[in-house]
Length: 210
Image (tube, rainbow, N blue to C red; front, side, top):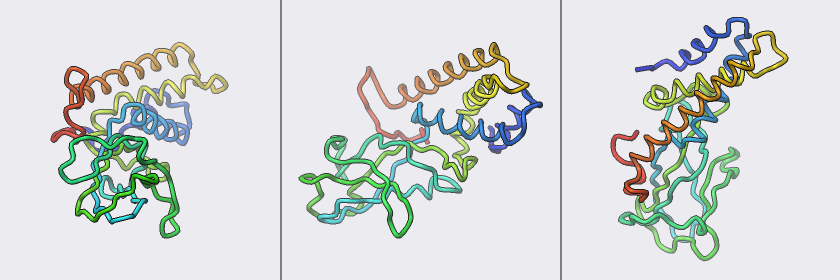
């Protein structure tokens, strides 16, 4: 199992040794964020208490990695401890707001859908995560291991496609772009098998997925 995120840029640098290291690391960072955004592979369930008439709830991801990852999107939201049906996306919005002078990901319930009663652990939000730009190597070991090949292919496709650079190679850029697309399909397929049966969602974040 791959446990060191530096392994990613090391593998890319081996392929393109003429490329400056800062270019390599930047390309791996962007490929990581793009791959996870497009696959929703890194998910987390965030549970919090519901407070009567409170419309905004912070999405705290600090427990998901050494450095709090960014939230790419909300996959599902469940209101009520025993509720198994996701809340309609027309009832809330995903936003970034300033909380205690810090930009924070939040879910905001819209007028007419704000919870009316207190409930312990009454709000569960399943989010899709990506590493933050400031701490792009802070990532779940499981996710790193499963996504490493796709991330490497994505970085190589980008670097070989920089036509003005001495290491550029359009054929290699195309080849790695195709391999990147294949890895996106493979990971999306694995996720679909975990979360759906005959096209119907059977679990929003099943045990063993993360």
